[in-house]
Image (tube, rainbow, N blue to C red; front, side):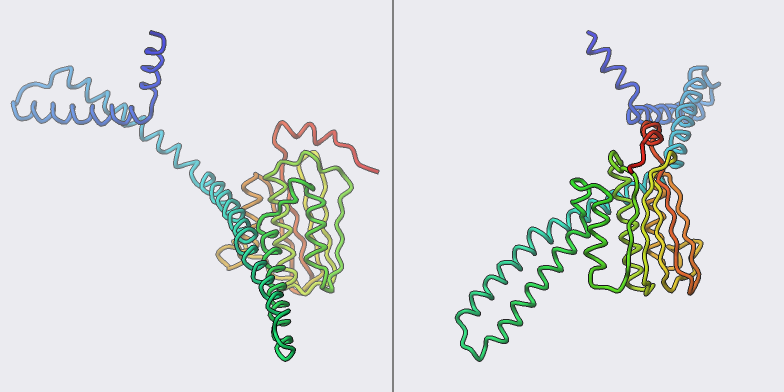
Length: 297
């Protein structure tokens, strides 16, 4: 009996059932109004009450729809970023598992072929094997960029240091990563956002800035995780709305920060380098723990 009462209560509170009831009441009131009009009789009190109930249900549905629409843009932005991360992970797995294995097999076949070719064809086979090896390396690097697996195992600081070492190894950029505090316990979505923003900044430096010096600083503050990136490159003019002006990288940074309720400031002028300040606020439960974190000496 209790289970039956519970099911009835759930049925009554269902939004879908409420919409059905509203539709049924509107149809009944419409049919009753047509009959009253056709018979030219006074409107019964029951029909008046039915119209009022139908109007009340319709009003409640309207208010609920307005509340849903109000929160829809932020929900869509959150969902979009989540879909992007999931797609990155999927592409990373396909590159590493499928294409990587095919390239490895092709490289082994090339080495097998090289041992059996005559001497006058060894040079061409050597070039083929070197090309396959270089392609396999690039595929692995792309897989690591799409899905930084070391974030879970190594943490944010170590992952950024490994990324800087690998990305800037054969460049003239002198870099420094400053982090004088423990970064344990950082929420995963915050660590991913900080990593992606730094990743995008490094990509912009290599493509456009022509910088010689790069500074990346991570700081755990009572307000949240602070990320500071500075370079001495060519600089640019930040747009008020980066997405509309074609600055897709800056737009992506803003979306990631806004998703976590943080703030992003980009300071740059042509010829004067670029500084990026991002603050990711702590969740209420982590704020007290973050404020008591001690600095490592």
